Image (cartoon, rainbow, N blue to C red; front, side, top):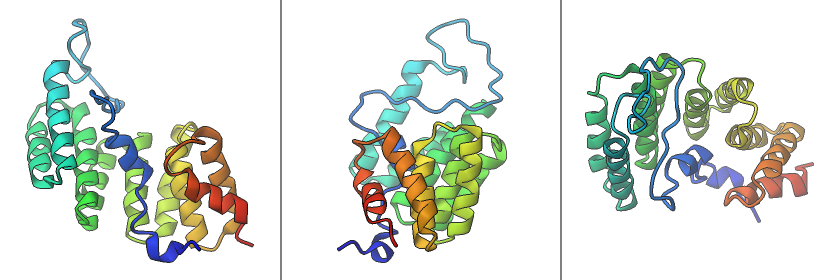
Length: 206
């Protein structure tokens, strides 16, 4: 029998699945609005950083995270914050926030994600990250608010539906939980997170 109240803080948020998808050898960092660098060299990213150098930094951080060397990963991200490219900063703060979340430092995770949101208030992932932090902290109304905004910006956001379904379930708003769980399943039926969503749909929580 599912014990959602007991496992809610153990559920791996979709954001972490997105960020730590280490089955790939390269990692694409989400592009934020406000990029000011014009790209003429295909070997340069929108942040004005050589793509090979950029990818190596992130892959090194992911490898450290896989080895549970979170402090080492944070050191890499902190170095990236020194790069003078405003459009890079929100992404790095989200990665820092997700690393803190893996460490169980949920307040620090929220602070990093809020910094990202301040830098990119109309970005879907930044809103989703903040909502995810509030979800882990047990503030489900705020988790819903920020994920609803993320969906308004990017309707194709299955991860947002996941957090909304989980939040509505824990608030006892079962019909809304079912709606969002079904949206998630329609988009990602084979996801490792689908079993939780399928349980909500199948049982209806009535």
